[in-house]
Image 1 (spheres, helix red, strand yellow):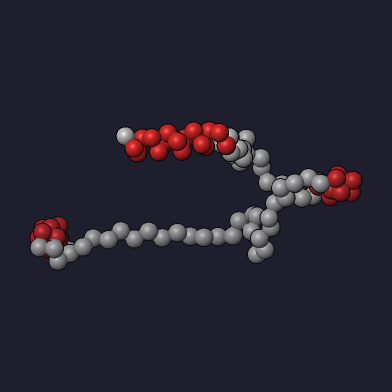
Image 2 (tube, one colour):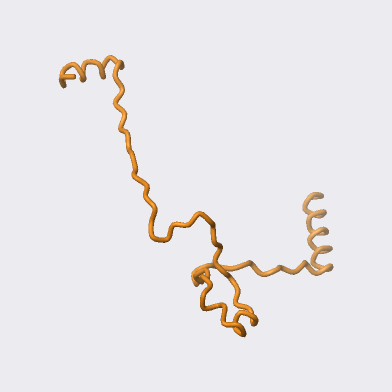
Length: 92
């Protein structure tokens, strides 16, 4: 369409421009039909047999935070004190 006709149709909302994207996918050098999970732990058996040399290992993430430490519980006297405080606050 000429530019003038296309602008006229857009103004009347009779034309909608759509951008299409396409991708070419090819097999790479590391292509495999089986999903191989990398090893996460090095065991003494692997070291003894030397099998660790042929296994892929998961890279170590030094920036991860890890698991949060298990927290303890309040002391029983602190629980009683907070309950009494709450009761007195409710009473005014």
